[in-house]
Image 1: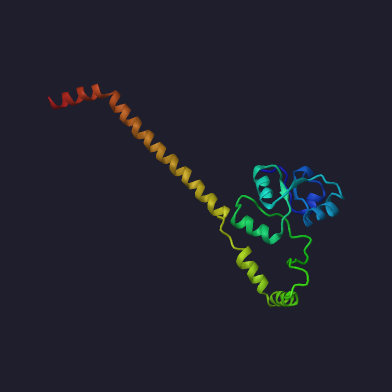
Image 2: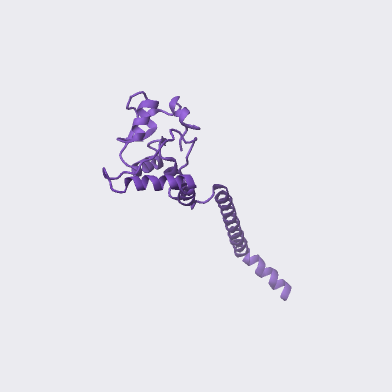
Amino acid sequence: KSKYIISGIDDIKNGKIPFHRIGIRINTAVEDYYLTSISRGVRNFYPLTSAQELYDSLLAGFIDVSFIDASTGEYVTNNIYCNLTLIGDEFDQGDYSIVTRKKWLYMNELDVNILSLQESGELDELKRKWFQKKTCPDLSEASSELQILPVGGVFVVFGFITILSFLLFIWSKRSTFKRYLFTLLF
């Protein structure tokens, strides 16, 4: 776990995390943003080539932070990598693009339909449906379950050791018990 506690992009800009502990996917808009807004053109980050390498590097502890699209990050941390978390508010919000062939026949129709979906609120509904769902367990529920199970195990082990000790005591005092029972019966 990282020893650097940060709350957002300003902490990264202020150098609260060593730059070599920041993972950046190379040849992306994120790299451009980092170079222009954070490091002033200095390539002092941990270079990553794919999203999978980003997640693996975070989990392995090679890096402490990285940048990811908010919707993707929300989905991934809620459903796939439950032990990763998002911090801070969204920053550098802007328009997103869909890549198509140049002079595509349906370009204007696509633009109009996307704008219509955005104005009607359906894009927000799709985001809630697909990106904000959560399959990872809630930490507060999981922590209470984990605390009860080990305590129950302690009681089982204690009971087993108590019974075993009692049987061992009886076995070691068997000759005394035999004499006592013999005197009572005869």
